[in-house]
Amino acid sequence: YVVFQILFVGYSSITGAIATLSYIFIGFLLILILDGDTVRKFSKLLVGICVFFGVSYLITYALYVLSGNSYNSFIINLATHTDYVYELEILFPFSPVYNGTANVAGLKLPRAIGMMREPGLYQMVIIISYWLQDFYKFKYNLFIKFILIFSLIVTFSTAGYALLLGTIIWKMFKNLEQNRIGYLLGGIPIVIALIYGLIFSESQFGIMEKFDSQSGASRLGATITSLELIKENPLFGIGFHVEPNNIEIGINFLGTIAQLGIIGSFIFLIPSFYTWIKIKDGPVQVVNIFFVLILTMLFAQPIYDKPITYLVLSILLVIGVKFEKASLYKRYVIKSIYAT
Image (tube, rainbow, N blue to C red; front, top):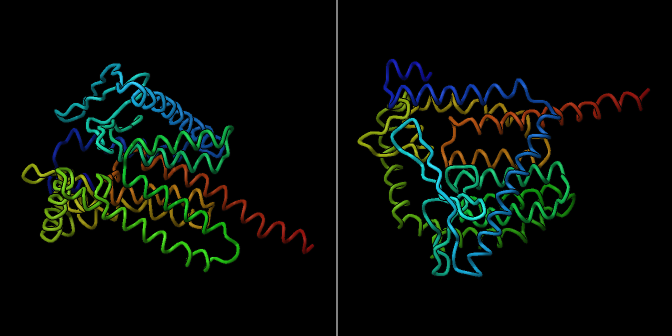
């Protein structure tokens, strides 16, 4: 489909298109080499990396609170296939931070990004690590979860806070054997209050407040432009990664629909649909990871063409298939033994 767009619709950069297709291929390739043991080892590695960064951030913010200095260590420049270069500031001891700060109670605080390029992506990695830890129960469970939650807090990501809270509530609901109605009736007012605070808070984390910021204004403008382009080019879009009039519409999923068209967007989402069918009856942690990935992709970061998306889907499929086989064994084989 991307080749079709390049030939007949339009594209932004042939180098960027080839790079993206290579990333997607790498992501899909993982499903061929992953198995249950490999996924467990990878999950442990991912959790370990996030904990490493989390401990570093804990030291960084402790020093900031005690001395008022974040102690810059060095800067890493990361080139892209465009002319843009990411400048990643590393604070002592090894804490990569975003090039923008969070305003909290009058303090300008650095935002954690870990191994990602921005907090909106790192929040997803942290929450995925949290639920992998909850699923596998590696050693030092409470300590690891504390470090991961702290790491999420210092991303200062509104989406991250909402996703972790929402998935925790969903797990609590799923684990209730009885009195789910009472849980819902008691929890709904709390959820409504949290949603109200999330939308109308006057802090920089409030959604309405974000619309008043420069970042929010650019996203709103990109959304309006995207809707107009979808109306004009509904089926095949305007071209792969094309940014009309230098408006960066690819910062949300509506922008990617405008670029790919409805047909292309559906094609790119097929792996997600397939994964959901396979895992929807699986462990709640696996379902929560899927929710975090998809909601981040649709409402925060359009990572439909990034290898991390297919890596996570591959992990979920491996765990889901293992769970599905175990369920079939219990359902049919054990019943047959008892019947015999």
